[in-house]
Every structure is written in structure tokens, then in C-alpha cells.
Image (cartoon, rainbow, N blue to C red; front, side):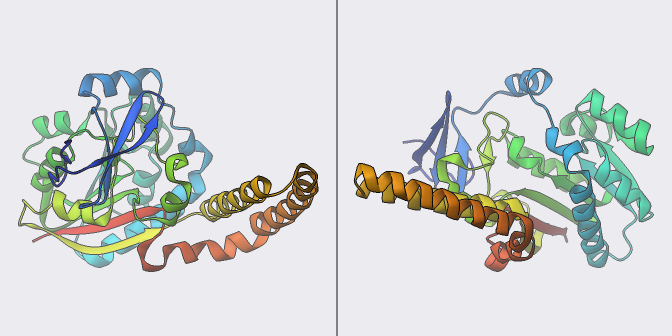
Length: 305
């Protein structure tokens, strides 16, 4: 039996095979994980040769809007906080927004290209390094806020990264983690076609339960708040999957002639529904996905006591 690397449960199950990669599911800590895990060297080569961060430039406005909400929450949780470390700072949008609020913000970014662009465009203080190298050279530094936005799911040893972050965080400091949500409507509906099952870069898909195991060995870390959020296209993706499944069921149960007629009717119906939701209702209704923390992205605010 394969043990879960997060909670050590020996009864995990093979869940999905995507290309040459396999994801296992742990029902105890509600985590998906890749097995075998890619090595640090393999991941470094992948990011160097294959990984393209298209969403960064494509969705700058929404990233900045989310950054403003996150920074507002952070400041409310630590009123005297002045320094921030953003791990995996990408193109620098979050850092730029943090600077605008008056924070002394530093970024860590392993991509030389992204680090250079961030410094050039927004005059950010970005260090071209990974977390372990940064910690090796800056053990004495402490921060009021540390953010890891869509980063932790890329590591092959999240316990090690959390331990390093804890050492860099000041007492009463806040760690903000954002990552795709295992307990989301998006994952429950899309299943093996889940938007964020992208091996080998996503080595884990976490839940809030996963993090209770990840921080339980550090008595100084306590979860302050758990939230989720989604985007309109996530609601559309769910609806389209449901409609597609409905259509397939109809086609299986009908005759060839009925299939043809239903295809036409369903096609027209889908076109009307998609236009209606894409252009209007999805922009209003998508927030229902977040009720009871079933949103597409999991947000955790963790305090160091």
C-alpha cells in the first residue's frame, strides 16, 4: 500500500493517470498527490524548459484585485505589520500592490526572467532564488507577513517549506497560503478533467484538512481564518460539464433519429444558456460556489503565536 506523504495514511487509492503521471487520493487528509514525486532536479528542468506562466499577464487586473483584498485582510489581522515576503512573486503584481500600501515588500522568484521584469516594471525588491537558497542566506531576517500564492502545490516536500516559512515569520506574523481547493465544486464536477490537475508542476491538490496536518508539528502556527474564492468561468465550467453529461445520457438512451433531433435541440439550448451565463448571470452568480468554503481557491491565514 502507498502511504500518504501528508498524514501517513497507508490506504490511499490510485485516482487518475494523466499522460505518464499518476495521482493518488487520500481520504483521511483529503489530498491528491503525485506518485512518484518528481525530484527537485526534474522540477527545476521542467520549469526551465516547459513551464509558461500565461495566466500572469493575461489576468493582471484580477490578480491585482485579489491582491488588494488579501492585503486588506492581512493588515486587519496584524495592525502593526510593516514587512512582507512574497514567495514565488512571479511578474510582481502582488508585490507592487503591497508596496502601494506602504509595506516594506520583498519577493523571492526562481525565474530570472520574471524577477528581472518585476524589478524593471514596478521597481520591486525581488531576489532571484528559491526558498531554500533564500533562507540559507537570510536566516536572520523576520517578516510580519509571508505570502505563498499558488505556490505550495508545486513543492515536493511541503512540510519542509512550511518549517522554513515558520522560521522567517515574526511572532504575531501572518502566513497567507492560497492554492487550488480539493473540496471545491470545480474538482467535484470536473474530476479527472479538473482544471488544476497539471502534472508535474502541481504535485499536490490540498484541502483545509491537509493543512491541519502540515502545521500540526509546529505549535507556534495556528490557523486564523479559512476562506475560498472562485471566478465566473469556474461556474461556467461546472455548468458545461453538467450539460455535457446530460447530453451524453440522452444520446445513449435514444434512437439514431432521436439522437439527431436532440443534438439540434441541445445545441440550440446550450448556445442560449452559455451566452446568457457567460455575458450576464455568471458574473453575478459565481460567488455561490464559495458558500461553505467550496470555492475553487483555498485561502488560509495562519498566525504565529
